[in-house]
Every structure is written in C-alpha cells, then in structure tokens.
Length: 196
Image (cartoon, rainbow, N blue to C red; front, top):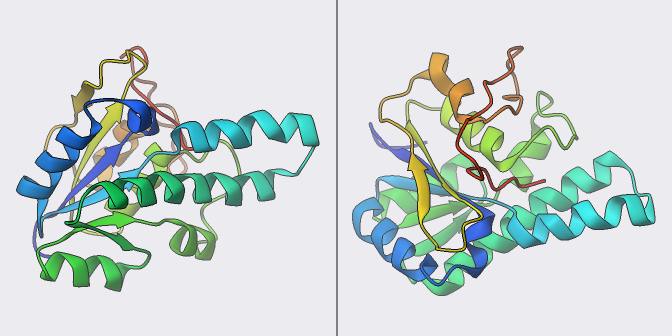
C-alpha cells in the first residue's frame, strides 16, 4: 500500500472550525507529501448524526454508515482547502497518491464497511479507524487530534514507530477493530474528536 515508512495522521474533526486549520494543512502538505496519510475525524458532521439518532430512532448500522460519511465530509472539506490533498478510498488509491508525492486523505467507508471485524457501533471512532488503517501496514501511526479549546492547537502527536502491539494506545478507549483488547483511555482533556 505504501512506501517503507508512512505516517498515519488523524486530524480531529473539532479542527473544522479552527482558524488554524489551513496552517496545519500547509504543514501536512509540505512535510507529508508522499509520506503521510490523513485520517479525518467526524467533527460537526458526526455530531449531527449523534444528535439525530435518538431523536429519529434510526438503527446503529445506519448511524455507523452516516458517521463514516461524516469523516468523509470533513475529509472533502480538507481536500477543498489544499491542492496537495487528494481523496483515497482504497489501499491502492493511497499508494497511488503517495507515489505521486501527494497527501491522501482517507475516505474510510469502502474499506471499513468491507471489513467484518469493524462493528457498526459508536465504539468505533475515527481514532480507532486510524489505528486500524495503521495496523494494516508497516506505517508510522501518529495521531493529531483537535481539542475543544477553540485555539486550533493540535493537542498531541503520538511518538513515532508505534508497531502493531502499540496500536491500542492510539484509540483513547475505543475498541481497535480486529483486536480483542480495549485501549487505555487518554488522560488529555478534550484530546479526542470522535468520528461517531
């Protein structure tokens, strides 16, 4: 899917309204061209799904699909903000974008829905999907998650070279699809922008 070392960077959906978002995209495009895959959070798009589900009573399977599409909506927004970012909905599309020195923004629906290990549940977040994507490859998984501070600051970046055995640490209490362990909950306040 990728060159020998690729960073998986999760941009939290709470950055959607941040005045600093464009600057972060500039950084991602300059240092990540051909070396980085962006996993978008769901942000306000997922919040709308979360608010409507109890109000309208649609099932978890529908909410799961809508939450995946929420990640894609934020991803499309990111792509529309920077010319070096391109949509990628498969391993081959990610590899193609990286080979062209572009920064693929993962559109998770096709791959996530094709994987039987990923349950249709609010327990599956953009954080756990980023970890799942990283675990499919010898990537360098990192998470960059927007907090709720309103400053546009990126709250944290995970240490490099986290192998498959460390993937659960990326998930902030979310289940890593395909693994039976629960991830440890992060102590950073407001660090996760979930893509439910």
